[in-house]
Image (cartoon, rainbow, N blue to C red; front, side, top):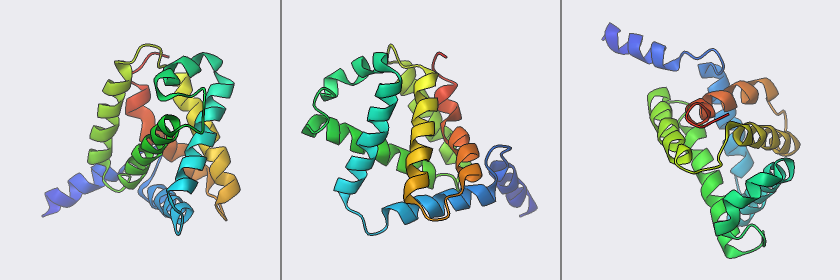
Length: 162
């Protein structure tokens, strides 16, 4: 039984995002969506993605197939929702670091196969996401989010070019 607890402890250790920070991030994240519907999720996700493209205009081409030219189109809204729902999965896996590692690694391989996807887009996504969250969540925990975002995306960012 001690071996099981030892493994859990190792899985929970992360210099960037402690178990306590992970719990805070999950709590903040779930508070954000409490009582909201998909239209709020879509609006939030679109805002973050459009800010990434504003910061990196060359990234717009990556979203051409999902009709970024019309951010109110069903294609772009559906894609925005897929992205935020995938991020939701990662956040909720903070409490299972092994599963988080595997999910993030899988996403890294998926994004590595897409020409033009580079690490700076994920870094900007994180900055814009945290900026938006800070405006929406009472008592926002910036330090926890900053470290945990790096944990959430390190396998993705590590799989794609700088």
